[in-house]
Image (cartoon, rainbow, N blue to C red):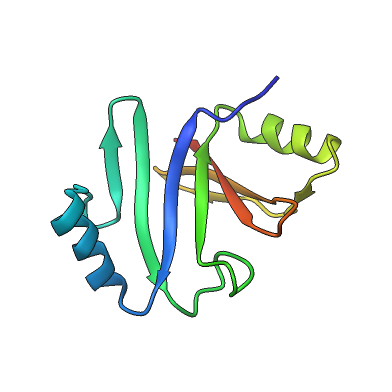
Length: 117
């Protein structure tokens, strides 16, 4: 059975994304690079802030989105579909970054799944 390997990222809407990122860096010591990549012992996690009006999270009412790293995106999406989950049809490939897919939980929260490159 496929399972998530860890949190691949956590994304927040913000009126001022740069200022919010700086707050996390300055107050919590979250050491991320310019693209939001935070390297941890067991694998990368992206911490990134998005403009308040982004459509990337699906519903504008959703203030944040979790990203889970997975080993095999296609197998995970197939497993979710077989279980009746609301899985987005599209996937995205980003050269050097990996592959992405999305599922919406029963409460309407969009979740991103990431198979790192």
